[in-house]
Image (cartoon, rainbow, N blue to C red; front, side, top):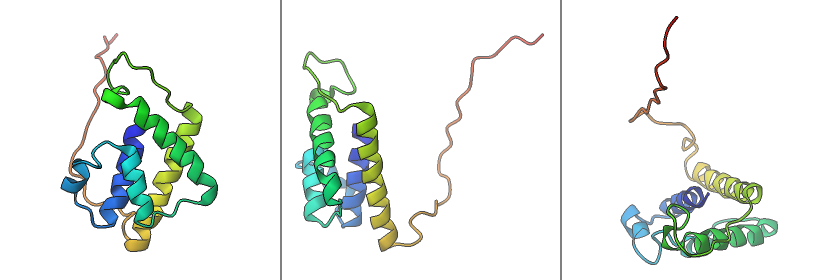
Length: 128
């Protein structure tokens, strides 16, 4: 969830002209709060009825991910959002970024050529 919303917010900021290098450094990096604040100040159109949910989920994910706590074991307590609520908020943010991308470039939803393929191989089974 945290990674998905981070990439969505960074995608919006890339649409606004920030470089990947700028987004990798402070104040942005993995700081979901800073990314969301910058998105809002850059014109991100989050409906009023969703703003509190988005802000709350971002804050909960950001605090839960201190010391990369969502990825690795830490001794710090965490308070991530409930899964259904968090997924709903992430999906709404991704949808808003998609709308912004399509407004800028109507072909933004058309995938380009494939550059990488990942094939998952299952464990071989004995044939009869």
